[in-house]
Length: 425
Image (cartoon, rainbow, N blue to C red; front, side, top):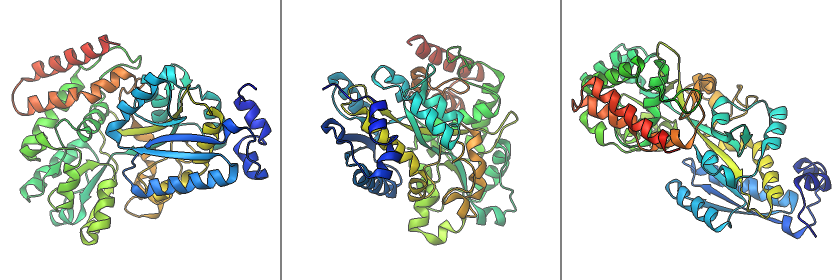
């Protein structure tokens, strides 16, 4: 007997997941009774617990057994590559950043499913489309994104009569005062992802870009890039400390937790961690939208999308579970304490679970419209992600901040690096 198509699966189960849940009748075919799912260890541990609960409910309602395998984020690339090489492994895989582009030939077309979700829950955000829609075809179903915001010490701002910085230039003004108080700004200028996820949005907010909308033409050699590089040097000299040149992704969280930094740029996990360990300090920390530049307000969206592999023996079951995940979005968002934000526009309207309920986080209700991802204003191609992964702009900023190159040399160095990367693809 041949494999069952998704259309047949949906028909025989009463129009998909909704039919299964309504009839409580699981699919009869053996090959449809089990799926495997590979995902990362979420930064919000309660999210993994909630995922297990959703999986158990899905199995109870559908009769489809679900195996969830967690993996550390840095191990994802090697694991995916191994499964592609052997053409065997998980039915469903969680994909970060550019993975839908990188593994395009190995992923099932899920455009029909995204279209169905869009009708029910609103169109995907631009950042989700940049991530998971490859050459006009949805190769993964976006699930959520994390966002970067400013976390600041309100008590220090009040003490020095400082205004919350609405622009990056405002941040320089208040940053000088914070450093004098012994509470410098905490923005890394090192080979870590917080550095890259901050530098690019600052460039975009100034009207600049690494590459044009076509996803091919390098545009880094421009006045906006010079402005960003010069802004970073004065921030480094007047508002920060030399240690930012060697920070890791956790360092700005650590300095905020230690009561040292007066302002950092990070996902809200920094605030949440302190909230759970030092309530007195957490009461002093507030959250704001990423500052804006003269061109726009821009923030970095780290999108997560789920792909169904072409070597899956149960693609229809995997898609059914994806529907269950989307339907359980609000449960997942609440479990993440606001870390996992929605990708569908109807979900991206307030009120949000957690976000809208916390006065400190309420300003973030409007945050989704400012989110873009690596490669903006073009798509998140493998070339764009390699520029991000190789820390090209961050290295350029560090060299200029420490006077190893002049401005013209720095911009030319970055341009040559980025052009060399794009030439490989």
